[in-house]
Picture 1 (cartoon, rainbow, N blue to C red):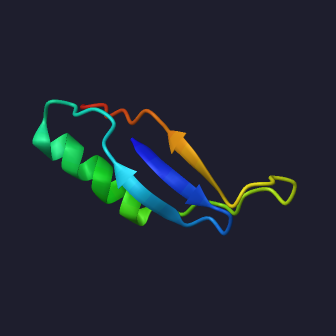
Picture 2 (picture 1 turned 180 degrees about the horizontal axis):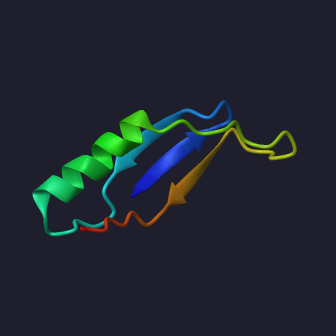
Picture 3 (picture 1 turned 90 degrees about the vertical axis):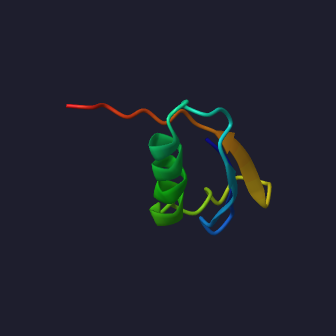
Length: 61
């Protein structure tokens, strides 16, 4: 999952970096990013935002 985290903790420009191959998992990963609550960037961070790429894993039981 790739996205941009803004100084105030907003998540923008969300997109799948790579499909899981399962549409339901891909859709849930995107939906999860709409629900996520992120902290603000640290005060000593000099940029306005930071681009991130993070792995998303699902475990079936």
